[in-house]
Image 1 (cartoon, one colour):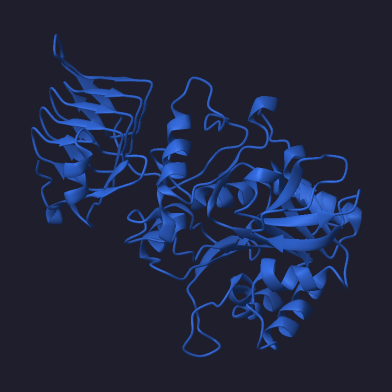
Image 2 (cartoon, one colour):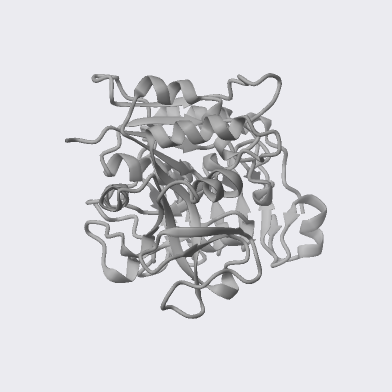
Length: 416
């Protein structure tokens, strides 16, 4: 029997720790890796795994996300079971937003009931990773589980920010602990614990019963990690799936198990910077597991001028389509689409998003420029952090974040 699997992507997070990159967009819509958005990872994983029926639940500041889904992920419904449909918050419980992750599903429970799948895959849209979800589903079926939680083994001293699980030797879950200092150890692996990745597979009938029961409890937070799963393990078989066993076609063992919660500016910056290394831990060049996104009719990148002191070049960097490096230098950086670097400028250790224009003789170091920023000639960013703090957001580690605008016509100048 071929299983009918419905994918539900939770894409409504505020992403407050990523501010100001989430000032005008939800976290899943934040650009990543030059040409992608964070949500592209979970959607690509589902499509590559053979899950073609997907609802994307949106909520806060969803316009940028909806536009991206429209540009890159809407395809003709040739078959009734092939679709990617964004679902804005319906407020079916009155004048209230989603109260938790399970409440987001409950407020759209009619979609699950109408689809009538065998299984429901509930995945978050906030993380950067590759995963063959079909292997998790196979594990779920082999265990005859009512629910399965994707888990990643972490050293106990690194798991304080995650929900962790207590499991039996065969990895049946017998306890949940949310963000505790002393998480339970994995049987047979002293010093290690299992952290939840926020990705779940459920038997549909069990999920529906649990959602209706939880919705009737006034003292519930209506959240999978806090309520549904901790209660469910006492009535049903719920297992942890070891993400480290997941194999991606075309990947080598050193790339296995890559998963990043890019929830802060520092973690977001580090994950992007890793991509430009010689052998990055996240391989974007694997044709057997493509990372899909919106495609635009942009020309190839262009590098102009070859003179001493005025040479268009990019070293140890990622340069997206439509960029023009006109007599400037780019080192150890990522450039989104349509970035123009003018003559005599230097960009180092930075993330430059789409449609930025960097004027002549600028120096930019260890910075993130959001979309559509225009940097006037002779500007320095990242060299005088006290000055930068007066005009931009600067993290504790010294990363300067320059906010952009909706269109290049509206851009305010960035002055020294």
